[in-house]
Length: 408
Picture 1: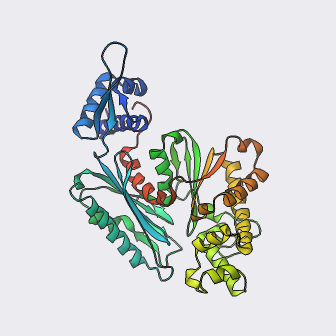
Picture 2 (picture 1 turned 60 degrees about the vertical axis):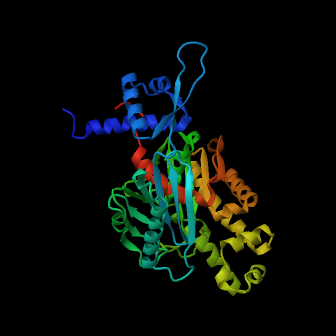
Picture 3 (picture 1 turned 90 degrees about the horizontal axis):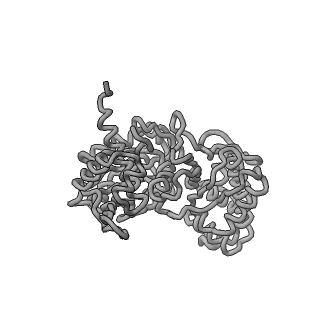
């Protein structure tokens, strides 16, 4: 006797496997679907017919053959459905709307105040901007498949409660899911750590990463990693896997918001870089940067640091060397332990380009196990600043379109 709901689970898995193949190939015939899924032709036909009825796919064109009936190719209907994503950290809030093909049709990013950030301000920003994106979808609300929310800090994905985020004062046990769900009608809302969303963007929007082991490292107010092994996102038993910001680094004694000292985050995060520069300015260092800021502490930020590094400012270049020393040491540990094919950095520091990646690569190659270096690459994210927002939308995509790659 089948468990309650087993038939529906099986039907959804069949649908999502077929949709994934169509997404990956761009266009595919029913014969190819049967061959690659090992489903019966009756199952393929009934599933494709349902997808056609739901306007999620369409007949794209007929293929060419030397004889016999020409195969009809099936493609995704870009306007068949939409995924909304919204995400935040202590620096900014951003969001994106993806069509059913995973193409971004709307994007925004707004900075938060440098000082005085409150829980109420962040929640209001989430509410206002989510409603704005729903307004963008006016007249197409019935085609919104899901909403994904990317949250920083420690998160209970089962309840949607953000347990703790040290970079926003008094941010403890915030029921983000309970706050946002009443704003939408009949649209499922899902929440995950924002860095996990970044990893899901690669999973769903870059088919070439299928089967690959890769790590996403996000450096913003804090530092977080997401691990994808053979298309599976590893989260850990309490959803806290990837907290590399709290790896202890040699030679560091700086205080970290986690309450300990010597953490990678306390040396390399954007917040830490700004604090190190402010301390230096007060000690009569970083003279060139201080002049460039117009002698205004509020204008000292990561962008100004990057500008000065690229201009060859000796003190900023020296700070970059220290940052790459700490970060390179931690990346080497990750490479030796997890043996990924790629480590992908998502950070404003990527704007430095070769001076950053050459230093990090040299540090890794100096200290990593030689076999781990084979076929390994360190690279910046190709999505740039849009990755977090697109990733949030992919949180909804993952929940709605996930499947088991087997016949069930």
